[in-house]
Length: 429
Ligand code: UD1
Ligand code: CA
Image (cartoon, rainbow, N blue to C red; front, side, top):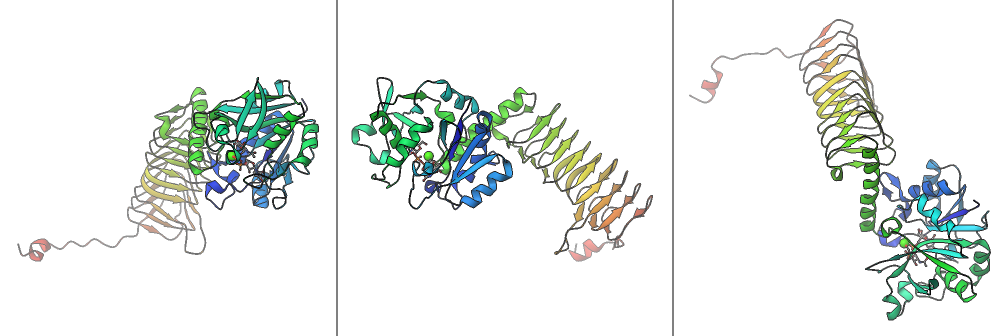
């Protein structure tokens, strides 16, 4: 199938009330535009994104994820609007599927259904109880006659509950014929892509409406829409994981970003957040833990633990209020209240409550390396850079400031003093 896809993403997104371009706002950890490009690439190799507002910033983000996407820069000053976006754009195929860049929930399967219909133009429509904000679609005898924007609509047209969802399949020759004829004589002084539909109808082209699901074609225009879209995307991600064998307790309370991978038997308790390209295998993540961009296999984590980016944990137990950052833990137990940053800790080692790797001296970060079968007593500070070899005991309350050789005891303690009957003297009892 020869098809070109064009994604419109040049607008500012004023209603988002944000300095960040609209299409870069994230849903499930990835920019909105990422989700739509990912689906578009499943149906066509020729995908062009139209950029304008903050073009370079948006382009840089897209390039981080995709290599084979083309870009077209819109002349926003002279030709603003969704019609202006397509001026000067050359597409490879004679069928062009045009999408708004603010529809992160559409799927490749839904996009395919546009191509199946026989017509000069196929456009997406939704029936809405509350059509406010959308362009209204006037349909007569099953054919689209006209699209009128809310701001330009007459009172009667505003009553129409059939709206334009913002996806169109248009023959290239029709675009070439009518793009030069668009005018900006409307409420927003913009060149509307939707006017092409009206003009094409007047010329006798057939325009079929394709009724689509509101949930999947919803445009994100505000941060309220963003939150609604997030809920839908989260449901999709977690439903798929559960169908693939992951146990998720109270899924509505769990947040899992796009890109997180699971393998084997995993259980995720309520309130858990898992971000980035994390990988989790045969592990149990207990309530209210946060995992970012980390690799975890055969572990129990939490409740209330935080595993920060760059961590690699295997056969390890992490208990409550333990924070791990950029560390490699292999067969370790850290049950309570610790900070393990920039560290490497080996098999059989036990980290006592209140252990802290002091990895930062105010200027640079340093590493802590701990060998096998080390017993780190409670309330130990490990001042990095420092290395503890295998089979070491570190006494509770020790501040370790130099390397500890294999088999030793390390202890630093102020001697304990006991003053007899001090209490009674002090309180005069
Ligand atoms: C548009 C449609 C409206 C439809 C709605 C569906 C027009 C004139 N109106 O309105 O009928 O109901 O989508 O969601 O097309 N963009 C550009 N260049 C621009 C302006 C916008 O590329 O100059 C991009 C935006 O980045 C965005 C998309 O086009 O991704 C839609 O723009 P937006 O301003 O959200 O259009 P709506 O007012 O929602
Ligand atoms: Ca929109």
